[in-house]
Length: 288
Ligand SMILES: [Cu+2]
Image (cartoon, rainbow, N blue to C red):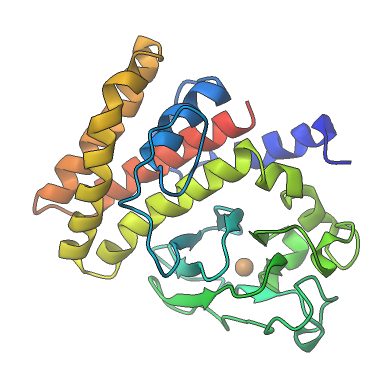
C-alpha cells in the first residue's frame, strides 16, 4: 500500500514547506541517491549506508538525541527512525507563538485511538507557550509511536516515531483514528525505513546541532558543530565531486554560512537560515 501513489501528497507537503516564511530560495535538486550518499555519510554513526566510511564519534552509548522543531502547523522533521533508548526533544522554533502546539501521543488517555505500543506511556508535552520551550521524551518501547498536535490534528499536524520495529497499534491503517489531513502527510513505514527516513534523521541531527544555541549555549552549539564539521571536511571533497557545480555551490555556501556564523559573535539567525536551507534541500531530494 505504501507505494508511489503517495508521491503527490509528499510533493504537496514539501511544497507547502517552501512557502513564504522559509528563509532562502529553493535549492537545485540532486538525485536522492547522490544526496543520501553524501549527507548520509556526513552523519555516519547515525546512518549506516552502503559505501560510507564508519565514523562513530557522533554515536552516543546511551542513545542518540534528535530534535524536532515546531513550525507553522507541522513538525520538522515529521518522522524519525530510532533505536530503543534514543531521545527526542521537541522545541518551539517560531519567533512568536500565536497558536500554541502540542506533541501528544495517540492514546485513549488523550482522547484518541491507541496508535503507540501497548504498555508505552501516554506522553503529552502540554502546550508550548513560549519560543524555545522544549519537551523531551526517551523512547523505550519498540514499535510505531504516532503523535499529533491537539489543536491542529485536523489540519494535519501529525508525526511518527518508528522505534526499531514497525509493530503495535500504530501499524493499523492510517485511517484508524487519524484525521484525513493527517493521513495525507503521515509517513508510511517503508518511507521511514527508506530514503525519506534517512533524510528525516539527518534533519533531526542538524536541529540537534542548533538546539544549544537556541537555548543561549553557544559554547555547546559550537562544540557540536565542530564535531560535525570535522566529519564533513573529511568527506566533503569526495561528496562534492559527485555534484553539479551549482549543487556544489549551494551545499558549500550553506556549510560556510553555518561555520562562519557559529564561529563569529553574530546573531543566530543566519545559521538557522542556513540549516533551514539545508533541510529543505534534503527534503526536496527525499521525494524527488
Ligand atoms: Cu499545533
